[in-house]
Amino acid sequence: MNKYASLSDDFYLNLNLNTEMELSSSRETILHFAEQMQRKYPQMRNFYAREKGDFVLEEDKDGGNYRWCSIEPRRVSSGYVNPAKLEDALDQHRAVLELAPYVLSVSPLDCEALDVMLGFDFSYRGNHHLLVAEALGLCPGYDKIASMPGATFINYEPNFTIALDESCRTQCRMGIECRTTPFHIRTGEFQEEQLSVYVTARRYGSLDAGTTYLEVMEELATLCREVVDNYVIDAVLTPLARTIALQ
Image (cartoon, rainbow, N blue to C red; front, side, top):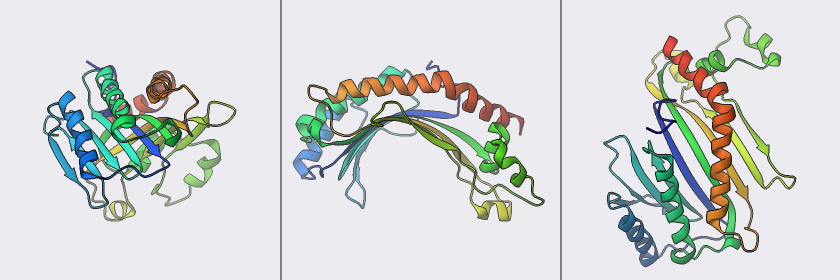
């Protein structure tokens, strides 16, 4: 069992490679990339195009855990929802980064940003913004205004980004996404929606000479896991899960 499986209802490990130049959109290139991924992961058999020129290859979602990858005009993405082992997701991302330079002609110079993201979803029926405030608290400067008579939280999504080198090329972002709208609060009609916590490690700019996408991904994946393990689990994920359980 993956150690992250018990922290939320769903979790996933995603990879995004954003490019400066547009990727080839020829039929032969897209299908060759998809076929190579399917050869490694035969259950990835659902291939389709979106309206904006994006192409997606994914497994069936019925089982609750599935792989997917996509090609957009200037981005290649890969994800694994609820993997049994984190290494399984990393192997998939390695396969994508091994194919991209040769099949999609992505040069190390063509990198706008490369990022690895760990995401955690909590199912909750109610005001997500209020839940986050109750679970994580407010910074002292907000306490007084939040206590105004009749005040109701309609937008409270804490997020921050830190740089981890002097050039600010390596960054880490932690963000929370709520899906409660003012309509839900006004009517009191709440659906069970996903409250998401994202931890993203990102490297901006072209790769250094002699450095590969795989090497940068490994560094980012390590950083992402360190932030989650050492900071986010105790400070964010556990309080959210505990507060939901008490509702």
